[in-house]
Length: 236
Image: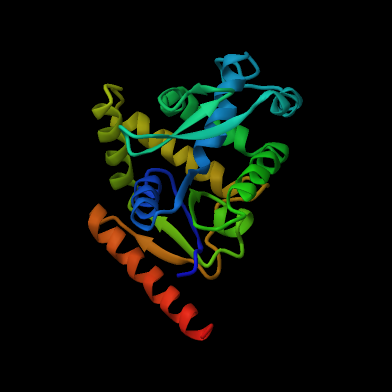
C-alpha cells in the first residue's frame, strides 16, 4: 500500500504529538516533532547567552548560530518514541522546561530559523511514510501532504492537560502560569510574519476537547484508510 505524508498542525497542548506518535507507531511511519526542533534552537541560544534571562535577543546572533546547530532524532525504546538531540546531546527533557516554552515562539518567528528548520524537515519527508506535527507543516513544509489535520481544543482543557503533563514529570506549574504561556504562544503563532499558524484549506479539523486518545486515533486511522483505499483503487 502506498505511503503518504501526514501533516498535523494546531495550537499548543492540543495533543498533536501524542496523536502523531501513536499514529506513526500504528502505521510503521517515522514520527518527527517539528516543535522540538525549534525548542532545540531556542535552548542552544539560551545556553550560549544569545537569549537573555529577560527573553531579549540579538536576531543576527541567532541566525549566525544556526551553522553551529546539528539536530537529530534517535529512537528511545523505553519511551517508544524518538528523543531530540542537539549536537549529539539528548535534550528531550531540557527542551520541555517552561523557560524554553516562554522563548520558543519568538525564536521561531525568525525567517532564517524557519527556513533552516524547514530544509531539514523536507529532507526527512522526501521518501514519505512520515507523520510530522507542528504549526506550518500542512501550509508551508508539506503543502502537498496527502492528509492534513488541524487540531484544536477548548483553551482551559488545553491548559489542564499541560499542567497534568508537567506535574507528572515533577515539574510544578500553576494553572494561571500555563494559561498565560499558552495564550501568548497562540497569539505569537497566529500573528507572526513568517509562516503563521493557520488551517490549510484542505485540512480536516479535529476538535478533541471531548475526545480521548483512542477516539482520536480511530478517527484519523479511518481517514487514512479511506484515502489509501480510494487512491489505490484509482491507480488500478
